[in-house]
Length: 616
Image (cartoon, rainbow, N blue to C red; front, side, top):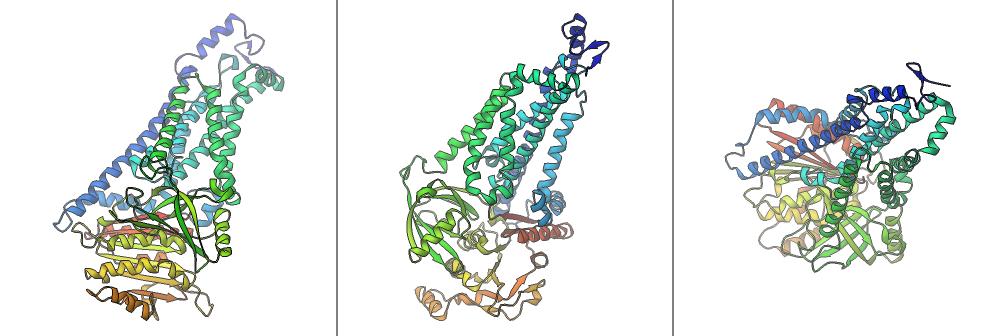
């Protein structure tokens, strides 16, 4: 098997002067080996441009929220209708969700907005790689295949973005306000895209080597060129990183994935450096990757973890665990002041229990309580036992007769809403099960600030779907506290709290409620008469019948999509959702549909959606 070009054999005539002249021609202009690295810069520029656009978006909404809260002329001075309309048109598409089954089977991101961003990014990088053409040189002796070099350098250019989006504290989150768990889908997608380009990088060498001299020629090149051999380890490690990060792999062995991921990641960076260092200035990308990665780790250590340089450094905290109704348990940790730990509604922490072999496990949990300035706080978590650590802790509590104390370290807080919740006229809080740990703090956050002049919130609608009525015990104290604070300023009626219990006492399937007019036979709840009297006795300055403000609907489940679309919107409305994939799909589609009201009504400026997941 031979390949010839202009009468020369690509292997037999490789040492002739004529071959050298043709090699010079092949390496001229934009076809030169060294020029192929320029295409990788376009991918770098594209990524930087996307981040800059997100930064401008953050700045605009920060200014918009601040202006809306601090302008008292009807809260209308910063109403730029054209921007509101453009945002509404965009959100009517980007807030929509793929059917849950499609997302789970394919692994595609559930939101259309994220999918569009990834599709455009992928298309851009493929265009950069393939549109220049000239995939193979006439003879491999003229130099490496241009397609392979372009693809390889694109892999190297993507590496800094993969590492930056992997950190819980990262540069992109800091400048854009997009929390790390929402960037995680980009981290995973960039990993797979990098693997695809790594394969595109490798295959031309194999194809052209076999075409010019068969397997013997390929074997000879493999033995002669070290760069062929040291390219295999990063390719294999990248594949393992990708395949072990799939939903299926994480579900089967979360702890294995968690501990192996960073080890494989370090090995990948090390072997990639070995493979390409000094070639086409690729070391600049490597040093950039190491710089961002190291800074993010150090920042997280000194700002978010027990290594924070203050009087609480290196000190574990006492966590009190107790079983609650509904097969969950509560974790409460006393916090001395905001200097020790401060957080916002909707944020979560990672907690590491000093509990034998599970001491290395670090699990995320949303914070149920709110943080109070200049006073002691109690950080509460509601934990639904799964596999691994949470299951072990629940079994331990059952053995210890419902309660136990453990030492722990806290890492956080992270996540949360990147908009100011007090800059909206209405909040719609939707949750299922333990997702209430995300939505309940917003309710209390608003109640604690009702007297603030700059608080724009006039109405809060709280919707919680649970399997059993006993689950209401999880947030009884938080709901009572929020309503009492609201009643102090005679604004308890601003809170509309509805709890839907899907499995009623008779065991029938719940009635699907698609319209608010179907909400009949509601049962008022929350505290017994004795508890209510006790609560009222504590505060002689006002009287509050808490049960009159909270309604429980047994054997009912709302059709969230239709239910939310019937919401009476404020000038600015924020819909905050945490729950199952089905509920998030419904909220996303409903909010997308509500954008038409922004376009058709001069009294409605914005309908914003914020979602949180149970896990990421």
